[in-house]
Length: 526
Image (cartoon, rainbow, N blue to C red; front, side, top):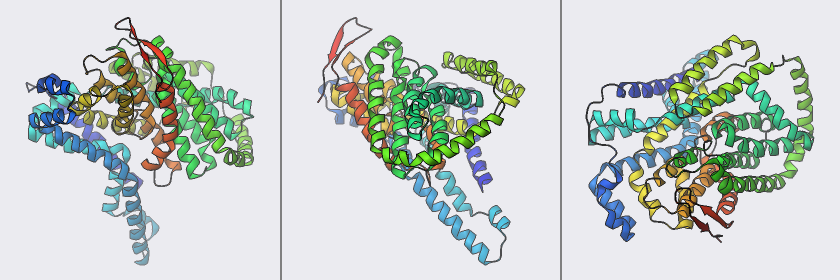
């Protein structure tokens, strides 16, 4: 049955790649799409502050806008229903298997003859495939409103798939045995301060890995943190409350942990060039607040679940001894091999905006991995490819949402803007939110600060809120029966989200605008 699911999942991925390949041919001529925001002729309505009049005018001007946003809404609702869809599929499989047993069928026959409807439901319950599925609907509607050429140009020239491709490569590199072993050794030094207890490992991973994300990028940090949490924490079978609190905390911490630099967090990448935000600007205005928020959130959750952590101690110590014995029998990895892996990661990060360079580098890496396979683990490309496919579908939908997001952001004051950016981020990748904010004219520095603060703050509320989240969910979903429940994930992330919001908006600070040379004071917000 797993083979059939892989077949369906592979089919939709190949189909998506085929569409992009076909679209990359002769695109000819077609009207500009999506329509530039200044083409709606509603500057007066925007100045009046009547946001509903603006949106109504844009729907009247281009009815496709409404359909595109409804399709996106249905895709989001689909992600929230994915766990229930998978549950229905499993019940159908159990019922079908029981009926076949009663009719005298063998277990092998049962295994190779699953109900077709159940397999289809499994496919529709795969979170990573959902946005790709709804791209088919979007394509149908787009072609009916415009034509095939418009859709081809949109896919081939308008939508930027660099980030999904980058995430695939950096995830695969970060999950290799030499990199994971090095990360484990580094984080283990800090866990040793707490005598390598489960709580010490938990704190070490959730504190250091997100901050490390500012230098190796958030997707790489998410991969390392999730794999170490799986090994050092989730295998101990924590309660459902602690399991969801941990993954919620992980998502929020990774989202804000990349703000020490201007290249590691996707939402910051979107604004660094248009607004001239340097790494020093990010560290002075965002980074230290993010670290403060991470420490406070981790300590609150740690003390809230301290009793449960103490229960893990005996089982953890026994397994740790067994693990040490197995590690003694493993061949050590030569330093030069680890160094080469780090060079490949550095090359990928340095050339993150140039797919031919980082994909070419990855192909060289695969050759290197084959040559040194004695020191490598199996390179599993399925999780990175699924995450990349998920993100590709998300940015395809996000590219036609500017008609409503930009005027909504431009109509708000600083605090409402920060809150709205946080809320919108939960339902639309935070990089899309900050990118669209760069299209808003005459944005004050305090408004720029507020929208980026909101975007990174809300990056842990849902799996679609921040680009690295699907990577974390892909690695950790096996520890959540039926998959990660979106509502419980949001509950696990809500407390650190509030703490991060207060860290960014409740601490008064003079934020200097790099473009204007002046500064606007961000007052404490209560």
